[in-house]
Amino acid sequence: MASDGADVLGSVLGAIVSNVLLYPIQGVEARQRVDASLGKLDTVSAAIAIYQYDGLSGIYAGLSASIVGHAINTVVYFSLWLMYGATLLFIRKQTGAGYISVALMDLFAGLLAGATASLIMNPMWLL
Image (cartoon, rainbow, N blue to C red):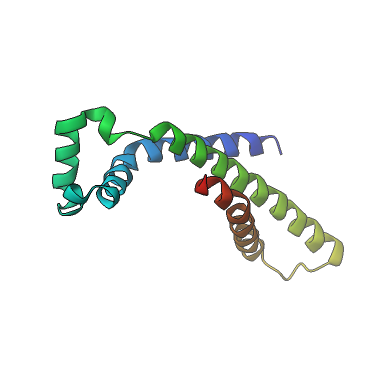
């Protein structure tokens, strides 16, 4: 479909925007896990301490790698979802299994895409 590329691009942009907006929480929590003095503080106090010591760059440290990882993950997931969805629709048409709802097939395609994307992407997140 012509809109598949637009769907994937929109999903990637959405992942990037949400990552930029929510990354400070993830970054602060990561710093709390490795820094004993920050680990004793609540998240807001730790964020203030990081900001006072490192500035805004301390809050967003590691964001670029996270954006790249999430963008790749989103492309892999939605590409697989589109592929599995098209395959399931083809099988439905070829077998005459019209009694299976498209919504159920989309759900199954999402399940397969999520599992496959996790298998493909998890080694990358460990690097």
